[in-house]
Length: 137
Image (cartoon, rainbow, N blue to C red; front, side, top):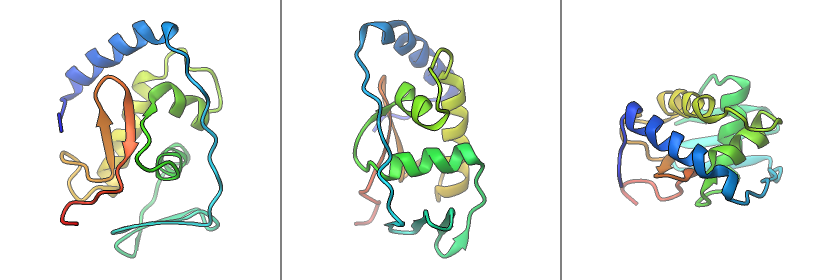
């Protein structure tokens, strides 16, 4: 697992943006499910609630939608463009910093240690994935 600081992640984002025009990207659709349950984290979609160890976590609309998208596709790497187009519902001309900010805020709210995330993993040069392998299992 490689961890990047904010400056390194921005440099990678610029590289990915530069080659994005040459890569074919398919849109991702969120399959509705009433409850997504993971060790220590529960997403009750029918109530629009997120619980961490039984406690409500307040998320913005973008944070919640990003979390649902990632958690609905566990283990699948989603590019920032795919996340942006699915959550923001628009083309992704300058999505890179928006996605990074939402992911950073989500990690601060749902991760036990936001510097060493267990749920939302960065896939270097590609995007993010929701990891279903929780430490200690």
